[in-house]
Length: 148
Image (tube, rainbow, N blue to C red; front, side):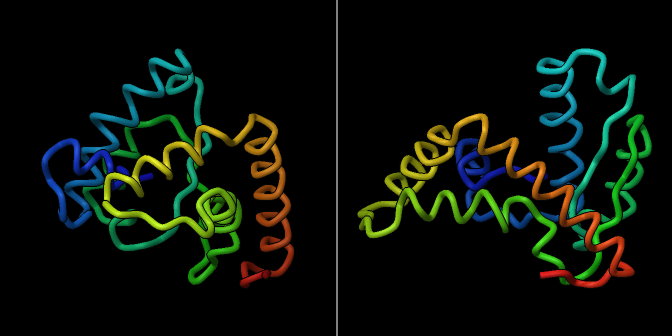
């Protein structure tokens, strides 16, 4: 989980490269407080944490922060976009919403993207989670190989 372009823009760091130090800051200053606020007690009882294996996510600074969470980290096979819910679920749903539109400004794109995400109903996220679990299981049964 990283910050969105809109978050970086709002923070005045447009064009910032997302590196390990930046991601570490997001985990500590954004994710952790958000989990505490939205799901009190979850960090203490344990979370299931899934992100891909790009260098930013596997850097020592990041793994040290994650070590402080009571969590189980799911392995993510290399080159497996079929296991990333954003890739197989969220982005296609957003594209459905904005397909065929023309945008004059960056802000117009950001607004349309926010609207597309807000228009996703709760069932959509449940479906994405179920699909993700099926894909993870299929990958595990396939020896960790790419499945789609």
